[in-house]
Length: 292
Figure 1: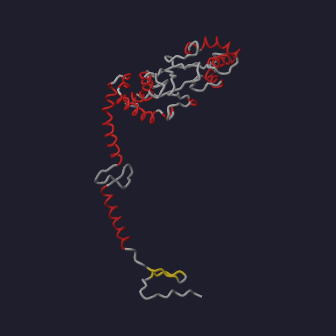
Figure 2: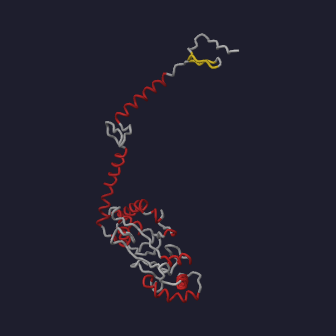
Figure 3: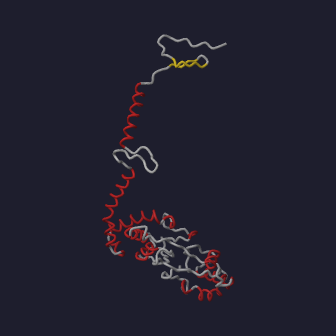
């Protein structure tokens, strides 16, 4: 039996004309406030498209008659900040590196500007806190062990040209022989020199092998690392007689270093950063605690 249509009451609005199982829907008009909001939104959208960037094109977008650009606004703000900082960068360039710390205001600016540069350019390798990453051979910049010297001038030179890269003739350069891979030492001699290094760095070792390793070390390693393993900052050779290690100081890691050598590379920043920013990051690194 078909459903009977609902009985309409006097004053009911018209229906939409559709019926579902006898149920009909009133065709109530939309609220006037909603309609006016809708119309105003359309008008506002049209005005916005005329005055501001709106429609993407193949290689660009419509610019709008005002020519407004969020990128342009950011660029203008950056230019304003750069103009304010330039006064300080000029002072930084005029100052002797060793005298920066004597000027409290300039030192404050250099450290803060250098910290920003470090976070953007250096923290990926040396870590956010500059403690380095031993597994990757990235040195800790907080201690007082420096392969190439830790004075302000030394740090500036290292940042400027980098280490063992082929981009700059003035890059710091040293190369450790691969004593095992290139068969410069026998397996027994490598065991001896590894135990000697363990001995001078105060670690557990085989006494007999370490005693034999003294001569091996003297003939093959002392020219760079020093007679007592004290290292040489001019040759970029790290000290081996302490507990500070670039790649790790356990027996297997030392053996790997002797067998295949290490050849860490640092890029030079002279073409990436203005000289004033290089000086700022050098000042920042120097004051972290390990600067000489």
